[in-house]
Each structure stands twice: as C-alpha cells, then as structure tokens.
Length: 146
Image (tube, rainbow, N blue to C red; front, side):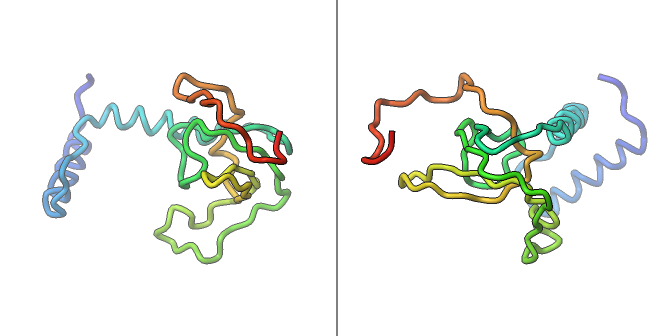
C-alpha cells in the first residue's frame, strides 16, 4: 500500500481521537480500502438505468436505504415519474433529505399484500437472480393469484 501524506495521517489521527471521545467500538484504519469502497459505491449510485413500468428490479449493492424490499427481493416498476418528488418532512441530517423520489415500485409485503412505495431509481438495477436469492419453497399463492 502507498504511503499516506502528512495531511492524510493528520485526518486519520483526528478520526481516531473523535472515535475515542465518542466511545466508538471500532475505527476504520484501512483508509485505502475505504476509499476504494467509496469509489465503487459512487460508481454504482451514478450508473444510470432506464426503467419502464413492468420491469422487475432489485436494490444495487450497497445502496439500500429503506427496509423493503430486502436485498435480492424483486420489486415491480409501477411508474417512473417525470418530476421527482421530495419528502418535505425530511430533516437536513436525514439520509432522505432532498432525495429525488422518481420511481414507484410495487412489492409483496411479508403479509402477502401488494404495496407501492416511492424510491430513488439510481439505487436500483434490473433484477437478475443471484446466488444469494433463495428459490421459492413451493408456497402456494393466495386464492385469486396465479
């Protein structure tokens, strides 16, 4: 690994001191790896994907910022909004502050109901089964669904 500059070392020292003051359990010491993760995550976030109603999508890793759907669970595109919506209740310290909600996805809730939610489409990709996705365990759909 390349040597770090004095400024980088000073930043790391301040990070360690702050973590110690706050009682943090662990400190990120591998700055090079963290920078690689940041660059990769940014690339994922900024990789454009054009969706249309009916597309099956899933979260891009590591961009999930809401509870549902879970990673590797499919959702269906219900609508792509021409004008993104912004949650007026989100505070500046929130991860949702000024997040452009420009896609409506439908999911099957664990209780079996179909729900729709607004999301930032930059966080999604077209769905492809992954090694992590678990195959159906032969559960039957409720009556009226096929």
